[in-house]
Image 1 (cartoon, rainbow, N blue to C red):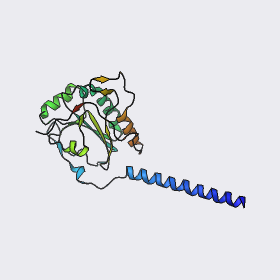
Image 2 (image 1 turned 30 degrees about the horizontal axis):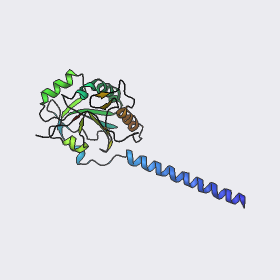
Image 3 (image 1 turned 120 degrees about the vertical axis):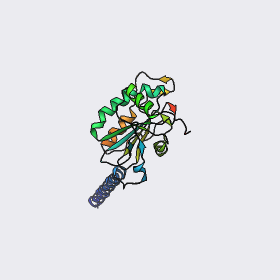
Image 4 (image 1 turned 60 degrees about the vertical axis):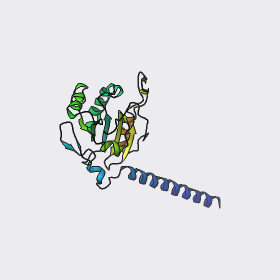
Length: 207
């Protein structure tokens, strides 16, 4: 009888492990699976040269990173070297990057000059109508958004935790939220954090 009970217990444990594994696989599939093209994928935004872009379109990339910025935010400008470093690190790994200039009062030429002055070389967009701002619910510059190939937002928030508050910063960041999120997506895993608080300047309203 003891052997029978032990055998039954082993069968229950085995079934439970199999069920948990199946649930985990389904959750991962739901996170990473590509969805059909939708209206969110065809949001059109001009770049600083006036070329119409569809930054959310699924073109086979692993992820899209949108970096919402303004030309006159000191925190945004202080992050320029880190933004460029992240872009150079991941752009060859199937991750598309876009700077998103969100101030309607800033012209395309001014945004283009700002990117050049601060050594930012990824594609720069001018979201003067806040189409991307609204889609991603962005409120701060700089704020990073990581989107999966299916258009779902995997992460939104700060680049790292260097800034504790406006005007108050650490010497070095202790948490690198944006790169942690990108690394997770490239491994087909959910990011360690999906939402963090960005510190910076509020996005100017539409005029």
